Image (cartoon, rainbow, N blue to C red; front, side, top):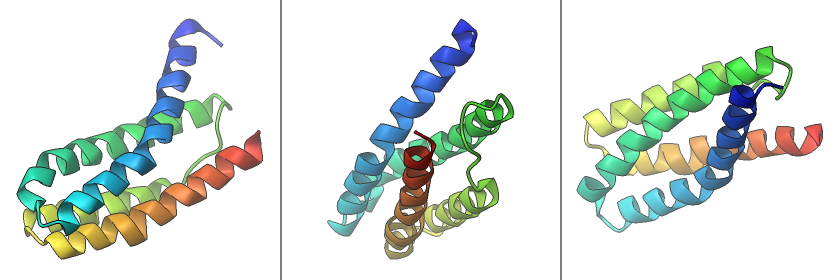
Length: 115
């Protein structure tokens, strides 16, 4: 594996390890009625999920990781964007808690199964 792909793989794994705790922190912030403060973190999360999908696709094509369900991730991401746009804090928190966190558990299982 070349240095660039090794660094990308390291960044991918690092991001995955921090994603779940970060999502939980955002959920808590929203549930504590700090939606406006959480919006910046939500927008960063949307951007991060887009990056995650692209990097997973690249690394999967190289045979370095198992493929994740990009369609499901994109669907969650779009629902999240819509809830942010609509300023629907309850829906946003629910998408994170019952959509994204469940999805992250699936990814964690795939990573564990591949080791």
